[in-house]
Image 1: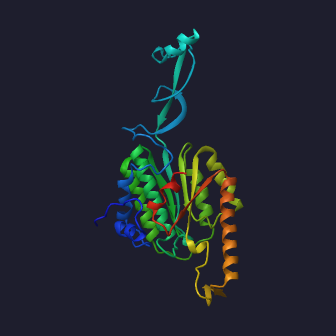
Image 2: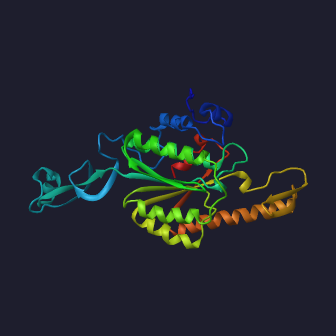
Image 3: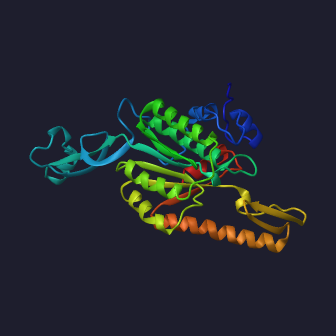
Length: 319
């Protein structure tokens, strides 16, 4: 498949055509297209790509490295090559430079591809947009020298990918995302989100950058302790995927419609101002609650719209 180059500020149609995406199923080619954007600063760091096995993340260990940290009094055993002669001359006492060592930082994705994510009213399913976000961030991280891994799950099973470096780690991870997104399974199993969150705590090693990608419809107070434990030892960022229909009902001529979910049936007026206002208020309250629950776990939230090309939302990923 020939993929056209993704350009900033493309229209929705141009963007979909460039990726040759259906919007609901995934193919690996549309995720490979994000490799061309690996040098675009989507994330928070602004560093030159790492060389060899060196990474771009700073450890808390101090020693000889590439990043200057501070100056302190010379102590017996310190490397004389690190003496700061300017400070020594100014103060009359010998001072030495300390450096913060650089190391590889594993980048770990927690990707929810459950039933509520398999929805989209306009451009993309939320699950597909989540995969695009993963691809954009993963290719950039691999270019910096970080290792890529993740835990991906749908309504029936999950797959774990231990962090690997270079393109190999990205390709393996994106293959799992594509496979599980396109998998047709039985009715959802209760507690899938919670059980995978507990598993995440076990597989993520201290010091990782963790991205949680979900609509967080299954999030509740009982999960805060797991999230807080995760954020205590890792840099955790929640990326909340949503669709416009989850925020507000469409503005149409008043029509009586029927919603059916298995044995549950409800009738209501679509296009009724009062119904629209109630729906919008309840949706806003529910969104605020999810963000607040994540904040209680000391996790900040970035919102990504499934109805807009990701190329128009780079600034959201930079926050």
